Length: 143
Image (cartoon, rainbow, N blue to C red; front, top):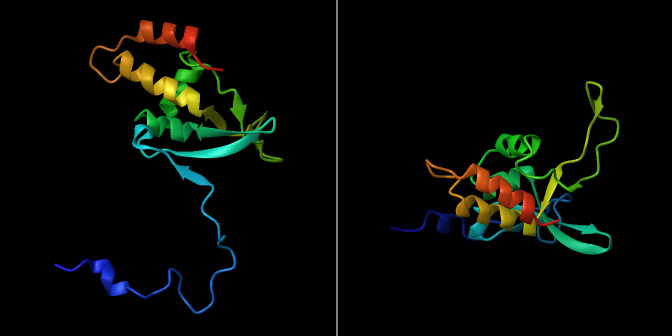
């Protein structure tokens, strides 16, 4: 059986004869993470002149096979520390009386640490070791 994509062989990746103006010529700023991160995408930001790789709360959730609301709950309950970095806050946006904050950012080291901790303390099993998990996070979480 032929590969169906062969039917589109010489076609450009955009319709029409002129290339689009709004599509950059460079690769995407997103970096596809390895399988360890379950397809979560990381983004690079410059912090104090040093480039660092970060994941948003959604990326961390995807890496841990959880939902973002679960990560936010862990953070609000104090099971994991609050995110140390955030994207810049959007200008003029308020939620009720609270001003909007930027998105939570977790460093690559923090994501690796949390993946290892979830695996080590069987958080995915029927008998998770929550007490040990929280103690391990409290004493060893990378800053």
